[in-house]
Image 1 (cartoon, helix red, strand yellow):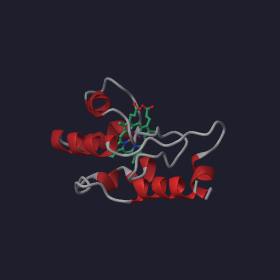
Image 2 (tube, protein in one colour):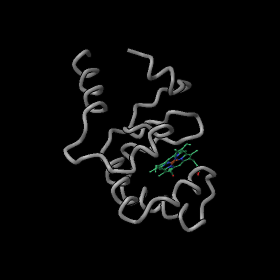
Image 3 (cartoon, helix red, strand yellow):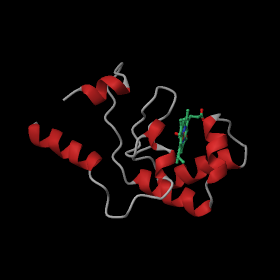
Length: 110
Ligand code: HEC
């Protein structure tokens, strides 16, 4: 139990073998650097399929999907940024979701 908790903390806390994308800082306040949502409206994106992430980001870029903040933030990302961010988030671990638990409560639990 402790080992598995430790493993999940390490998986989230350690940088992956590739350096973080230069634009990652634009995303962390809402999605975290691990892709675990930091606010109720923002979806978890860590561990999501890479091709899906590229597709979703391009949807915002092309105005095919409306997501307020996402439509404005996407304006500062070029294609390489989108690919790097999608690759980064796809390599993170999808968070274990506990029914009814908020992101804040999950972060606070040991
Ligand atoms: C101010 C908060 C905020 C910031 C900063 C932010 N996002 Fe988002 N993101 C959201 C919200 C809210 C949504 C849901 C929007 C919608 O309804 O489509 C979203 C949706 C997404 C989705 C779609 C997920 C899905 O499941 O379809 C992706 C991918 C994404 N964001 C990536 C990013 C990346 C990459 C960055 C940094 C460049 C970023 N976001 C910065 C709030 C934010």
